[in-house]
Amino acid sequence: SLQQEIGTPTEAPAPPMMAAPAAPPAPALSAPPAPSAPTASATDTKPGEPSRQVVTTAEELEIFDFVKKICADSAMKQDIAYKDTTTYFGINLGRVGRWFLRAYCNGAKKFLTMKVPVEHAQLLARGFEVEAPPEGMGKSRVYFSAAKDIEKLRPLVLMAYEEEVKRVASGASDDTEN
Image (tube, rainbow, N blue to C red):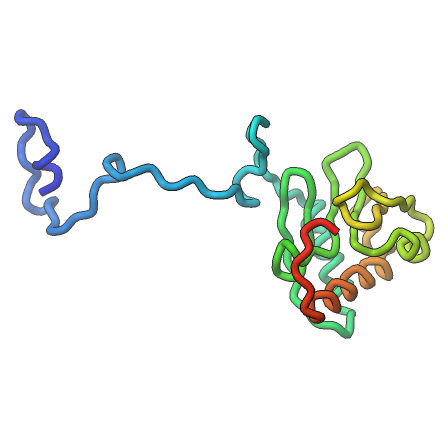
């Protein structure tokens, strides 16, 4: 058996019931697993940064529930999913590159980003602060106070969702930033 082959001369052989023909090597003898990309359930860090755990909060899940209910009212039926990271909570059409809304809830001010042009977002989010986000974060940013505000942003959420459904249906490639 493998245990007998690697054991020291003073070790007694393993009892017959423990020996198995063609037993796989013990984990300690196997090569370490190849490194894998961080996942939403593990950590989300860049080289040189301390490791941070991704924690999906109740507020983020509440936002997802509001968005899911809003999207269910659309004539366009497409499943949605989410991916949480340490910086944002992304809502997408089943793949990360097909995102239509990102919620940033970890900073001093909470906001959503989406691919809807800022001019349209301003018209659909009356009563909310709307601005253009930094490059690479979509086309509009809307500040909010609580998850329940998402319901007040229904027209904007619907537009973001339906525009992404149309973009994907047209055969456009996944777009992870804008």
